[in-house]
Figure 1 (cartoon, helix red, strand yellow):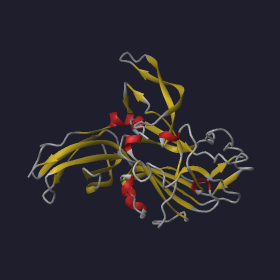
Figure 2: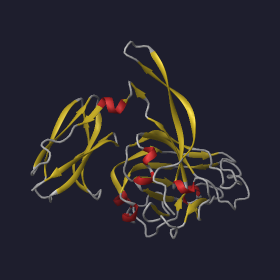
Figure 3: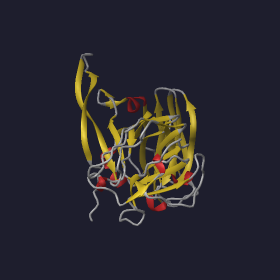
Figure 4: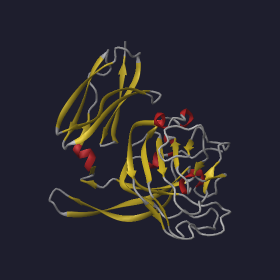
Length: 328
């Protein structure tokens, strides 16, 4: 099967974004919020397996790694919610009555490539994880419907704060404490299914606070709710407030300058990566900074000739990535 290289848009919900032109006149522009299914090839068909993790009544830590090539339609979008769907064999809506997770936490970040998944959870994270949801979660009776081919997705689990996806492999991490009641199995992709281990992969542990595991897991078919970043004057607020410049000199040997501008206070991280996506060096690690322009000197004396990348993270989200070349 030839894999789809962009995420399938299932449908779009129209909403308005208000902008201001040069004369400060309000202008209403049309934008779209869209629902994306990953893996995209399972948007219209049921998965090949099951997985209990996201809706288990017992504690779970569950990581899903998704290759960037099936997320191209999400670039520049803010992810605001996710959800899952029941098995085709389900015979009733779930849950039968309201259930409450004491804690249901969701983290998003970039990840290593799915084929490089580690059973140590932290090693699958690239950059900084953003906790987009935390605290208790009540799932009201009947939120996840049964029937249909494929089964319909359940009610969205809405984030406390959006995650802006700017490219790269995506990591979704769910940690929850379980609940009192009956679990629900979710539609998933078996580890033996084509595409698993390259386009996507997963791992899990039976603890809310687990740091590692010995178990890979089936990949849960997931629907993401995403929309364009709210813009003013065709630029997002983040893009207006922060900017990352091209390093100089470039190419370089072995020292170069990396400059970025901050127009409002934020926590800043600056990381160097090699062409495989592996982290080479963290130049700034979640440091609180006030407005101003900063220039960081990067010394690559210990590195080999080649192409490298540097990424600027603002308040845990990647703002921009640029390429540089070291020639010795």
